[in-house]
Image (tube, rainbow, N blue to C red; front, side):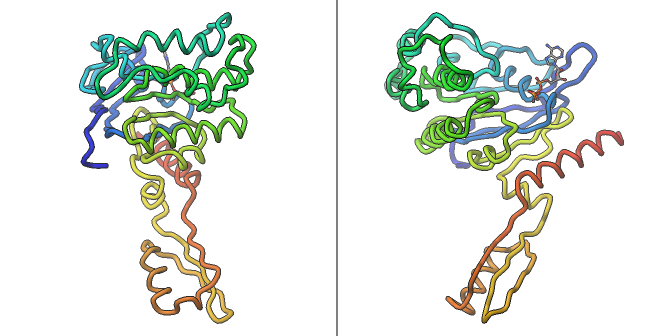
Length: 298
Ligand SMILES: Nc1ncnc2c1ncn2[C@@H]1O[C@H](COP(=O)(O)OP(=O)(O)OP(=O)(O)O)[C@@H](O)[C@H]1O
């Protein structure tokens, strides 16, 4: 992944509303094809960060580069390469699902390139987001979760190189959530689309993200894979196994090596092997609490 182009570069980003600093010093990068999850408590500044990258809000200071362009100066060609799924629903109640996607998609035709034919085929997208049965229904007849699926389809219809999704699965039932995860995993597998999403669902972040960013107190307090974050906090994994009817348990920072050594020495005589890492929830709670107590002490 490190040989891929950097498509998102944020350095020293600051945002002040009136006299309140919401983002104090936010810096991170994303490479082409990466799935990044932005986590953080309510009010941490996730939506603000995303909206600045989308070009919807003007930052107070710092450097932001999205697909080689400063979003504050992004033109229509740049916008056609960026997909956006907002938190709030913009109403198109009288339109039918397929009609709306075809209509919105038609705007992107002019932005096709040799490498990328735009837009996505509306039917393919409808199937991918699981709205086949609702394709000819008016948008106002959809349930909240079905509208959310439509939001996602609208964000993807222009076949963007980079997609921003703000809490895409909020309000989705488990089946729809699973469908959305499959959609994101499918896009990620193709390796062309970079995805940045915010969520409060830690299991979702763990499942989807190549990298997790945690925002707290206006700063990125953690940046890495779920396993890297867990090591940063917990340090050690717990490995347990049985051998000759006896149970063993050992804490280690090198669980892969320990398991390898066990099998080398005892082979198939090892049973009930389990490696337990700190869950992302354990890690997240410790990171946020630690940052909050440091913030209170400043
Ligand atoms: N237009 C605005 N004017 C003043 N303050 C604002 C404005 N928009 C957001 N804020 C404040 O900025 C802070 C960050 O808000 P933001 O919506 O970015 O947080 P968030 O991390 O997305 O939160 P949530 O998880 O609740 O969606 C909050 O304290 C919010 O009240």
